[in-house]
Amino acid sequence: MNRKLKLIWDFKGPTGLGTAKHHCIHLEEFANLEKLHFYEIDFSEISEMHATAFIVVDEVDMKTYRDALKPHRGELAQ
Figure (cartoon, rainbow, N blue to C red):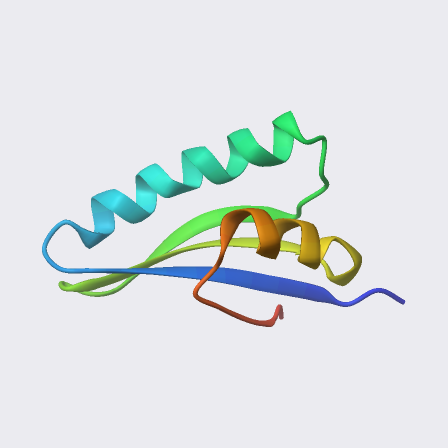
């Protein structure tokens, strides 16, 4: 069974949430252009000054996403 990984980008400051939302557009564009599978693309507001954008992918595809998009961190997806 293949594990699902969540690749995460952090955006801080008063414009962090807007930047995270916009980053999701680019994540989806990249996945579609490269014909890569993903489970979810979304954003999360951690606080007024911290937001994240993330994509959930299969572990087998992680290196392709990681090398091209340089996420700040990753974790096992729930």
